[in-house]
Length: 243
Ligand SMILES: NC(=O)c1ccc[n+]([C@@H]2O[C@H](COP(=O)([O-])OP(=O)(O)OC[C@H]3O[C@@H](n4cnc5c(N)ncnc54)[C@H](OP(=O)(O)O)[C@@H]3O)[C@@H](O)[C@H]2O)c1
Image (tube, rainbow, N blue to C red; front, side, top):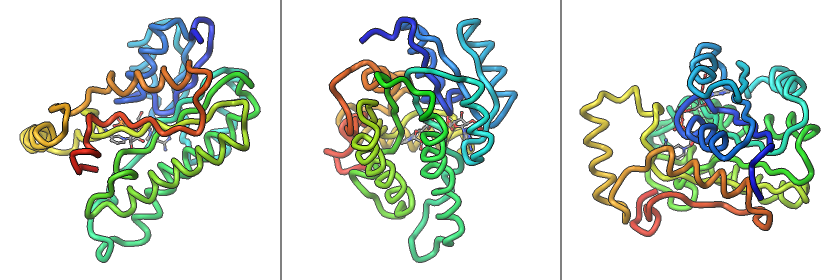
């Protein structure tokens, strides 16, 4: 399937993996709509993507904002959700507050759930939904119990939705470590050291660029015989024993 004349909506498309995916969909001839909370980020993204893209500010944790967003977008073909906030749930299970774990679920799991529900009336029957988990689901590491649980829940939800929503295809991209603004709060030196350590440990010897992950979303949107799948794009991290 070609993306020519298809309309893709990318929730989280103003940064990192989502932004790279928006660019790739556009380069393959799709019309693209991006969304995220910050109007400033949406404006900057639209400036970068050019006139074939549109975008709106929207918080995917807010059901009514999410519904209104899809009513504005109306009929479209492919939904990609890469949005997720926070990332503050690292730490030992014993020490981590339940409120922190819940807040993380509210964003990455319930945000994706809410988005699919709001989008459903408008997705083409020959279209696709691609959610985002993370390699930690397949290879749990210490101190990441919440993240592992969220990513596993997303993968389970996608398999169930592939059954419920067929013939709409529902899949998941599960990235390993990717160099995106999600790590911008770590100072540059520590981030470089962390990436270097990861690069030495994974089979493919580097931390992913967002563009390498974006290709997986294009595959899942265009391949007409894949549904209920989790596409691992993690450089061999799981085989190397890294979540
Ligand atoms: N980077 C990695 O190493 C890695 C590894 C495994 C899995 N992942 C997963 O891949 C996905 C993308 O990660 P990334 O690294 O590309 O992150 P990122 O660069 O931080 O981008 C996250 C995007 O989500 C948007 N967003 C956050 N909360 C939102 C909300 N409540 N409503 C709507 N939009 C929201 C952000 O924009 P606003 O701030 O404007 O809302 C931003 O556009 C996430 O699910 C992440 O968990 C990433």
